[in-house]
Length: 84
Image 1: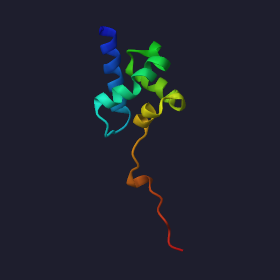
Image 2 (image 1 turned 30 degrees about the horizontal axis):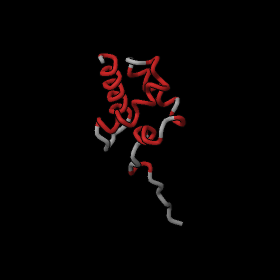
Image 3 (image 1 turned 90 degrees about the horizontal axis):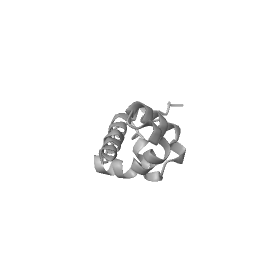
Image 4 (image 1 turned 180 degrees about the vertical axis):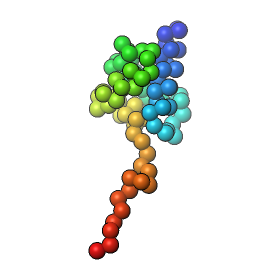
């Protein structure tokens, strides 16, 4: 039980520090808990190592978890057209 709580809080820390999200903590945990246990269990409870591990496995993550790592588009990334 204690290990499970540690895993959940570690995942929350990772997701909240890696990007700005509209998803709630519960949604983030639900989306990535299985992937974190599958790919990065050996890194728990070190949040920095889990973050690196999850990003290293980004292409293998479930679509729901992968979406948690996608940052929303910002205006500075928009392409500006130059006049001809």
